[in-house]
Length: 248
Image 1 (cartoon, rainbow, N blue to C red):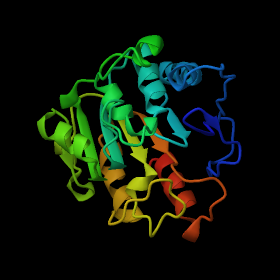
Image 2: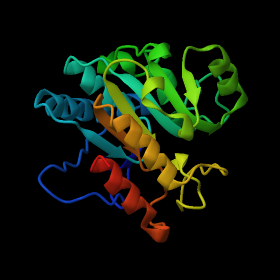
Image 3: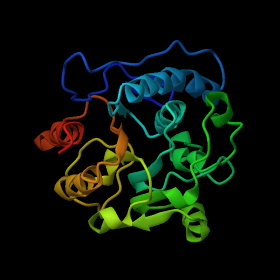
Image 4: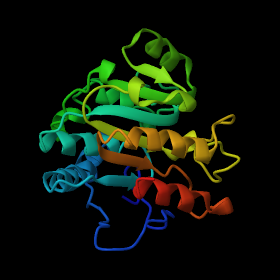
């Protein structure tokens, strides 16, 4: 999905393997508010995910932000899979329209998944709520005060990258969501919202491997949250995406 929210980015550098298993999802979006446009965009994502799951395969959705996860979870639910969520991110993604200082919708998808204001987009997609106690938020080192306040009393579990283990994961089938800005920006250049002090790419991949080794991952969602046209220092993007998509 070469998009950042509803902005089509055909030049977004996402180093994916070539082959028949790679499909590019685009959509003709109406002149409308952003939520309506995102709903139109995530409809084909949901259908593509559902089709892959019905064929007993594991879909990997790769996009320029984290809101695409709404389409991924919708697709899983359409295929009769109710996933728990393991969410790797430098940020909390639990802002709301009422609390955000920036107005950035990409800071809200996890909050929407757990039930915030379904009329914005969930109802039009048919997205059902993921219970808070079936969500694990990994890292989230850069939180705005309203996010910290919400997480302090919510059922969402938090842990560091090194603390991820099979025993700590929520129950049931898993969506593994990976915003690549969880990696320290010194190693991953060109990020839209870099947050200093993050883990290395290698430690993130080891943690992802521990999740994948459970055999419970039914879909993966990867946010390539960088600006188009920025240099891939040390081929970190290629290395990380190759490792995640290959399952190792």
